[in-house]
Length: 296
Image 1 (cartoon, rainbow, N blue to C red):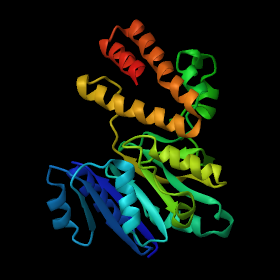
Image 2 (cartoon, rainbow, N blue to C red):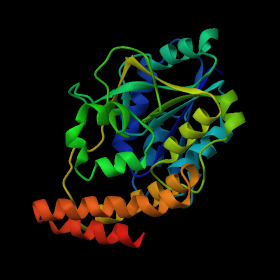
Image 3 (cartoon, rainbow, N blue to C red):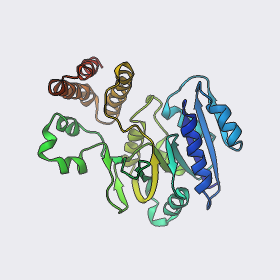
């Protein structure tokens, strides 16, 4: 088996079906299997996938175990030489598997742990495709100082970067929406850290791979549609719960990679940023986020 394609599904029936359709439409050159881990969905995901794609391997969880743990289940059940992790809200636009596979098979690229695509919206506009490892410098810059060095911040500090180049490049980490990973390296560095429920699990894994001397590579030739939300608006209680999960994972990432002091500081810095945003916009949810971050 060349490639195991793994998708975590949680109440995303339409998106998952569209993702699967794109996989079977475009993947021609390699042997592959598709494994879906359903995180206790309560929509029609399971029956719809089974009906339309009966060859898909399904793993069912009684509870939502989170993104990283679910992917670990898929990796443990997979047979492929390479692991291709795809978000359920992605769509292939070409035989991405073949391009990734051929790149990784070259002897000169043996130190490449994983590679990813140029992520785009359905209209072709860029999505965040990669990032620099999160740092206290990025956090302090977000207090407003980045206006003094915006270009430098984008290239060297930002943990969310849009790609505007056609050149293949080494990056700190790839957006977790698509991860084409060498199984042999996962066996050396380990899979996703199960302490992360959602967010920062791919960043922490890439950090471990980098520390072990391996590279993450962006291949802009490959375009993958990522149907993420494009809204930056705040959405009440749901948004605050999402912000809490994000803040806890970010703090965990800093504790594991930068130490306890950095982990203690990080959410306090972003709390200050949220308070500044509140003072500028007077949107009360920014104040709520500041309070939330100070508590965690």
